[in-house]
Image (cartoon, rainbow, N blue to C red; front, side, top):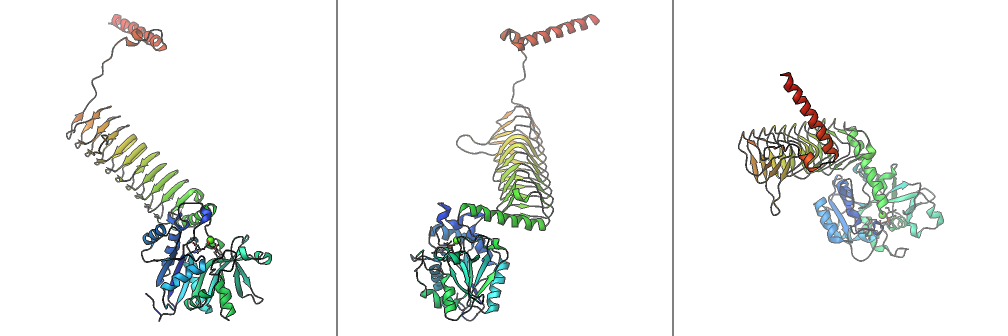
Length: 490
Ligand code: UD1
Ligand code: CA
């Protein structure tokens, strides 16, 4: 693992052992999500882009949960356990032990600072190497530096030390340049100075930030890289910051797709997860959520008021006021308004899932339509089928789920119930109101409703004195007079 011969090798240490008390959550802070990915996932993803020889993630609070998530997020990352000694300095110290005699640079990142990008970090590492510094800090000048460690510079403007908010005096608190919590160290500097750090401070912790003063005291060089875009340094400590950082990430994602040729009418109400993919000439209408691994092909129009989770939308499809999860929508298909597509829905090219339609675990073939007021579950529908309004598949018999199979070119009447398991042959038709309990052969017409019988005068006889009886009596006598007149004309 350790390559002592390559001085320019880079190792990354991600700090993720803290409790995140201010989140007031049963979920560890670094596992809270923005953009469809846990906070620490963003950091690991960015770190991986730098091609480090090693990525170590320090854990302690909710250790097993966090370790499992890290294994899923980046199988190449190694989990390191922090012991009972608290503080960022101790966290880096335990990780460093795993690096043996590593002689390159160590980039330290926080699991709760997800907005920093690989380009910024690459430039940061390059500036550290160009300056031949023992340590380089990332700093930012904030309007309100409250809560952060302050960067204290000497008369020459060089970094002398970092003082935490809780340990700072009034003059130090007035400093607006803050430590962003991201650093590059020569591994050798960490090995030399971390053991020397004590816990004599307001939080009784081993502060990583104390390395700076120790390096300076020994005549070493501490460099600082001031970032212009302060939002890159934003960390998440509470839920308000979680939403703020999530909003900034989303704004960045939306803008990226806009520059790739996607029309987004209203970035403020459009939410696109980092793993979603949109082709040029997709149009996204307001209040639309494109989540997880959703992909949208060129020419598709999505929204308004639509949420797609792990979906695939084909070319030139339209999806309007729809909620869909794990669904595939074919090219030129139309969905909605007010459709609910549950997992396992496959809508063929040119197909339609219309208004107030719910689908689940069903394939609707090419150019087939389920236009209105339907529930289609555990069903296979062939090509060029049209189901009348109110088609319901009764897929559940109280014990088991069964499939409905509908062939090609089937047309069903309005308000049909298909009691599964049942099979409708190619080209068959069904009458209005049919309850289809038995298979329908290809080309047959299935009728299950008894012929209509009209009982003349029923309303006048059984509902005398009602408005209905009055108008019925009038209509019937007018009809009689009319019939009589016609009789005389003959
Ligand atoms: C830290 C810095 C502060 C800087 C700020 C930037 C120190 C002493 N202070 O303060 O100068 O302005 O970040 O955001 O480093 N962690 C561990 N083990 C621990 C303690 C923390 O792994 O024992 C992890 C946390 O999970 C977190 C990161 O280290 O990811 C930072 O810890 P946090 O407690 O948030 O430090 P701050 O008080 O924000
Ligand atoms: Ca923090």
